[in-house]
Amino acid sequence: MNRKSVIFLTGAAFLSLGLFCANGNVGHSQEERTVIEKGISVNGRDLSGKSVSEANAIIDDMVKEQSSSVFTLKAGSKSIRATGEELGLVAADPQLAQRALNFGQDGNILYRFKANTQLASGQGKDFDLKYSVDDAKVKEYLSAHEDEIVSTAVDGTLTRSNGSFTYVPGKEGHRLVLDKSAVAIADYVSGEWDGASGSIELITDIDEPKGSEEELSVVSDVLGSYNTNFSSSTAARSQNVRNGASKIDGTLLYPGDEFSVATALNPMTEENGYAKAPSYENGQTVETYGGGICQVSTTLYNAVIRAELEVTNRSAHSMIVHYVEPSMDAAIAGTSKDFQFKNNTQYPVYLEGYTDGGVIYFNVYGKETRDAGREVSFESEILSQTDPKNIYQATGAAAIGSISRTSGSAHTGYTARLWKIVKVNGQEESKEVFNNSTYRSTDNVYAVGTASDNAEASSIVASAVGSQDLATIQGAIAQAQSLVAQQQAEAAAAEAAEAAEAQEKASKSEKKQKGKSEKLDGAVETPDDDVEYH
Image (tube, rainbow, N blue to C red; front, side, top):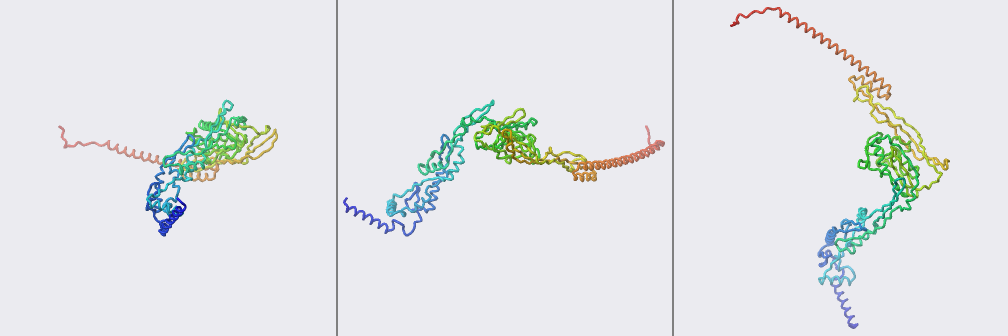
């Protein structure tokens, strides 16, 4: 074809385009479209004559149909299954319906010409519906199921038996890289996914375990030790102490690790090895599962502070305990009181806890870095003391004059502090207040009976109880009992008089009856003349 022919054909093509433009078949018509042209579809679903909102509804239905598709999310040898709905499956192009409406109207003149020629020839236009996922929902799903697809590293540890340590190697695990895994899922769904079930490899990192044999080999020195006696405890309380010690024994803390005694010991249930034994509750001694477990935390506390680990949380008991000096205790109470401490050394520490012969022991092992001449001790100081009082309460439910105890054992209240004393080569280097503690007092409560038929006596005792003075109350009881005795004597005398009077009346009546009987015995009977005897 020569150059003149090319010029002629090109001119003819542009003439044709001009005619299309002039006739309104290409470009924007004077009236905007409100419905989609005939022959336009999405993934084979006809959109002809549909408005944008109607087309969007069709596309939404297509997305819903695919929401039940199952994706297998793999992380090494583990995997979980998620549906499209759980991953927030959506249409990748939210403007797809609008693009379908504007087909043949948008773009440059050549694109519009081609699009309209395509529609005019009956070829139609089938849009490809691509899918995507909701990033927030994907991350939410992965986070919720992370434990099912990753393996947590198991740190190296130590066991102790027969006075020596044995190293137990750790095991590496895998961590989920959340952001990259979410991208991998989105890329697969919007790219190679064909609408059928698919498999996606998630992104993970190796989770290296702590504690090599070399690192743990330094754990050999006793940093702090303490023991307390529980030999006088009941069998149930002794069980709780032994059980608690066993739950802490063998704990290994790496540098910076924090330990919670409450977390280690809870729940306080029979299923977790505890029995019912005395505990403090609202100033009273009550029976609860785990009673006595505070002796475990207290003994550990004293070993820990002698090892000079960092105490991050410690509470005194509400009332004084007798297995350590004031301010040397560490109470455990549900979630309100806990003993927590941190390994503030540069090396791992190992907690050994056991019981033997009614004594509980705790040893803290690690690497000793303190000066060889350093000596740490603790001294309790009582700042104030509140002795228990005797409280008397009148009760009409008990006989007048009775006095009975209604409370548990009374407790003396104290305020106290604990001093930390540091000596170096026998010379005191420092003496500092380590903690302050307050212990409430509890009183002896007695019920004084006022029940009596003698209202005056009851009133005398009740009035004396208000004085809260035992001598006054006892004097009132003696007075009341005297009144009651006098009343009883008068009642007895009256009863005796009534009995005597009744006896006298009975005697007179008997004599009168006897006289009548004697008169009848002296009379003669007269035969009846009308009676015949045969």
